[in-house]
Image 1 (cartoon, rainbow, N blue to C red):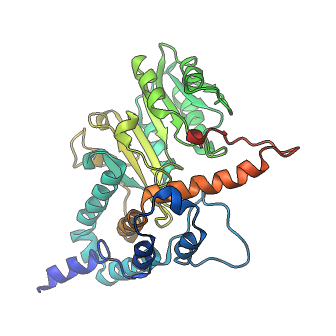
Image 2: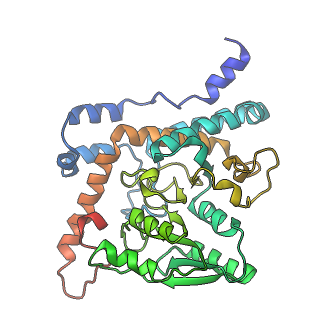
Image 3: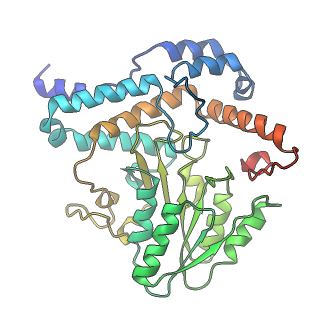
Length: 355
């Protein structure tokens, strides 16, 4: 094997084959049992849990900031750090972009979109703010979003108010809606002929409320309004396809429910729409409608990009269906027990499809 082939093999190391066999043994023992049956199996999930190094001082109930990596993904990540450091500039100049494109393609496959509609970013905030701040706004244009949306994006809308004279129409998402129609009509009521963009959270981070994104997108499109979806807490949390949502833009973090290393996310831009977005950082070598023109970052931790593929692989082996069923089981386990208690008010919807 020549030196070039060796380096390429080493820098791609870990993209396919797992280092450890522990997870395979656990999954093999589970056999063909359904996701619903496994969701209640404490022994099965205790073995999955054993794949993580957990601090004994406390029980970490906050996975929404970021989820710690399983030991297997972490070891792959550290291996990537060593390899990138070992090869130095040679890797950055010869293989970085090629490998990043391979990882982006894996993400696109998982997300249910085309590879040329997705770029790797640092987090959901960067992804979403790139759209909010990158559109060609005129004074008097309107944007619709909710009080329950994440603060970083609300701050970005305030910035474009001050900078361009954009008018924000802010709604309140019903906490315990009677129907999807009630939610859709709440957003629809804020749309006028001047509305350019509607932002909506796939999952409201402070309540766990899963919103009817497809219905909101269809409603907005009928009125000529583009839709930006904040998927920070959805991707890797439950099973869905971006194509089925029919949104125009989608941003998420990968260090949350996918358990990728800190500082990883992606931005989806529907094909044909990248040309209308001003890049955050200038990039001169791509065509106007090439989404890669939005992806210039300067030098960044390339090893993080590589480890995203390992995080995808780990989750795929467990199965998003099993993970979703377990998370729903745990959520229902405690909310069902406290929902009727005096002085306890739950903001998480009771309906199973909403949380």
